[in-house]
Length: 263
Image 1 (tube, helix red, strand yellow):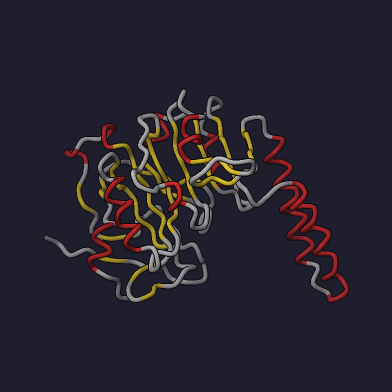
Image 2 (cartoon, one colour):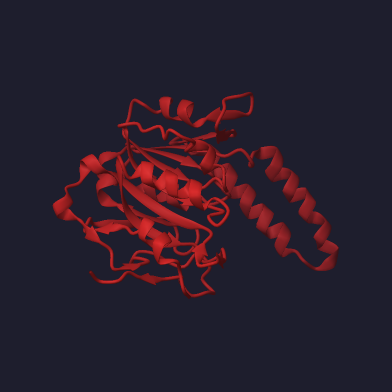
């Protein structure tokens, strides 16, 4: 599959740091530097979507680690409502919908009962309101510890990074899934350039659930480390994406890969 050389150069990661993967294989897991895990005891995670495998793996590293999870679309009322809605499929022999909703309810309850996970049902974006929290206010709430920021909020990430990008020294690592890249290409490039003034891009993964439009992948996962934590001598430009730690989001389709020209 042909990809835009100009676009791919903007998201060319630097390699050389020891890396690892948190979360399940395929969709739901992300690759990040071990250095970030050594330096951070807090994970601020935006977006749940009934998959907390990344957060669970983070907590398993140390009893001192904590997760702060934000999601606007899922609460107990929603989960129970979906469970009862699925009952209408029983007469049609489609019990798998009910089973799915039961599993989602169990996952949600286990998550809410975990004392090391603080779950907040709110939208993260540009402004603070009765049902929303601004990105800047979110960061202020976690200023007392070194933070890994994970963001998968289905397009709302652009609101968080409206100019100027708000950098905080205690955010040591960011794992961000960017969406709608064909429509948001110029805005995305602006954000990436600003992020690179304080962070180093260390992993690029193209989500193969989403299409490639006019040689532009429409959803990608990017991992950044604060540049002050690494030395240029440790790093070199990647020759290929994805990395060996990545898995295709859609296990039934091949990875979308790209080979960078050797200089």
